[in-house]
Image (tube, rainbow over all chains, first blue to last red; front, side, top):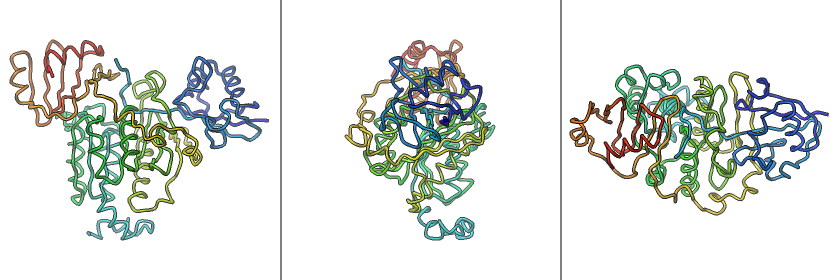
Length: 98
Length: 342
């Protein structure tokens, strides 16, 4: 039983630079918990303190945004591909506003 | 039309002679002429897109040359505004292309005017505030626009056709806070990823301009040139499901935002950017005269440099200013108020 999780480059410093991780879980939420156990700190970048998915990070299950499925309760099964896509700004400026 | 010049592109069946004629009649805007924008400008100019509006608020520096392919050592030495440097190079590349360089900050006052008379909008910006503004204006006026961003060896791009595809706010509901996305100063950036993202953006623009709508990629493309990975997520189902303020409710929050002069720390440059004032055009000569007794003033064709007490202020005609020598935004604001005073 394994689900393929694609890790985007900005998060790979948590995953020893691995871009694809195989995990087994029943839902996206469980998947994130497993990911956190294996790579502590990573899900802080993906979830708000209350556990909700951050609104500038998207998770796609077989190409569908989980916001429009069942969110973190969205089911995953053997062979499912999960992509994590955070928004990136690019450029050399950091956005620090006053 | 000079058929010889475009002969190899005309041989490419998907463009052909009629496509080439359409390109020569087409109008595009590039917002942000840094790494991505300069690469887009070079490709669109060589392809023969007839009109290019080039918008940028910054000037060329030595650290740009590693990845901003339109600029040369002497542009950095002269501190030429990027929009001007781009336009000059395009004039040397392809005389068929008419350019309109705009040295200014993009804001809620000028964005609609900048985009309404073009056929496609290319994103070469480096921040989400400008992108959400572009998104609002493009959704409001039904203009296609092409998001692109790159950091490290990683890039993202997505093509937005208002009313047809999801818009930027359907996909990314909220602006990421400062610490959450790595910027070039923490992650660095290599030119190959810039050229890869810009190539996808320009190919999408060529499809839009020549009418190959069914060939648009229709998703979010993630690419990593170091890992050699290329991945596309389809966005087919997103639009109908997103409760988007911009494209569903036509509420354009970024266009309606009242102008507040903002300050932004330019990390890694020991500098602060102070935004412009919208529709003003300052008399830099007059300001130079006023500042001369207070410090060292250099007046150039498109900007003014003022050095005082270890700080360096570079002022542009629309009022925006880059203040070097500090990353303290309050201090930068007070320097701006004291010396520029507008």
